[in-house]
Length: 92
Image (tube, rainbow, N blue to C red; front, side, top):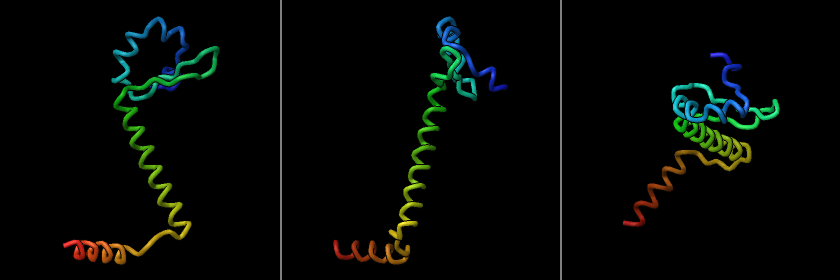
């Protein structure tokens, strides 16, 4: 599918809203809506949106972990496991 097929003016959205909503879940690519020749909005099915949000959350976690490594805020895994095991023994 060509990207140019996925760009529609807002007038197309107004005239074909029901059809677009019916067909959006079968589209792999999001639909870009333009106004006065400029991209203004993106429409996509809910499943794709949720996948995008999950991907963004994972990327944020990776970036945070990378930042912690760069800042030296890390501990050897063995030390953490030993500390957690000792914590479990003291609560018994």
